[in-house]
Image 1 (tube, rainbow, N blue to C red):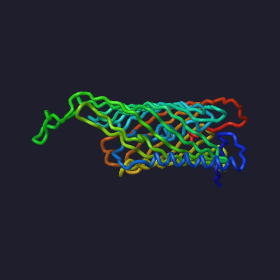
Image 2: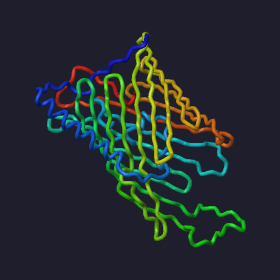
Image 3: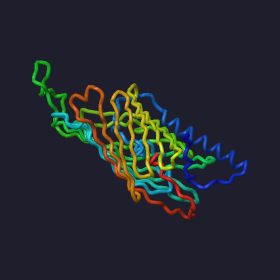
Image 4: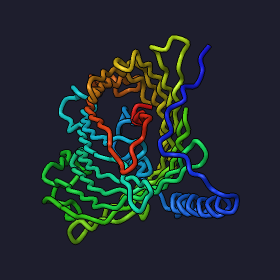
Length: 343
């Protein structure tokens, strides 16, 4: 019979008096509500802008900064995605992620810090995000509550030289409304999130592009960076055979009336080999494989579309490489901590 796998505590237990516990919970509730209000603030929403990703457990700090410093490890990750390969004459999306995150002890308390970069080329747009991240961490019983913030720069590059105007009586290639040169712009960008990390499960809620900033492209054009909401969760189940683990998880994201769900089920053998399957709403299925050795993990996913795009596309490929190493804080711990990146 399957039973939850109790992961090692991420932070040491805190011994608090009743009075201190009440003050601690009061401050914690204020922090949670502040982050939730930031996530839900505003009602003006637009089309999705963030990059598509299949191995969302690898890149999750890019959409929820509260995940940084979630374990006692320094985690470095690089991932690349080629979407809709084989589509003739199309400038198909290409994405590159790079991130690093770790716990950091300051003032006798453990915090989380991280950096990440995303380069996303979609059609005539080439978008780049550079961000720094911080997570405030609180121990609540055996679980950990993290509240995170991400500050950075979002840059957009629109290559108007690639515009194509059909030859017909309804189209005018000399229309002054059409841009004719490269247009570039950069804006400040903010993301916030919270996570709840329990011994055998996790859940996180976040929003990227909190202020929904507007780019000014040249003198005539504007582009809005839409606010996007994320909800992610998963658990770690150990089977009766100790060599096997099952890792179910799901990611929900929404921008206005556009929303998407990924549901995944992965199996791990002897902490070395990983295989699984994901389903994405209105898109199809995703095959997942991976291998771990000496702190490195190599992951690969193949998106098999079941929508109409399957007629002209050979599928999408995504490759990730991560490296994890222990971080020695000022007070050595006798127990080890499993990187929640694998959940």
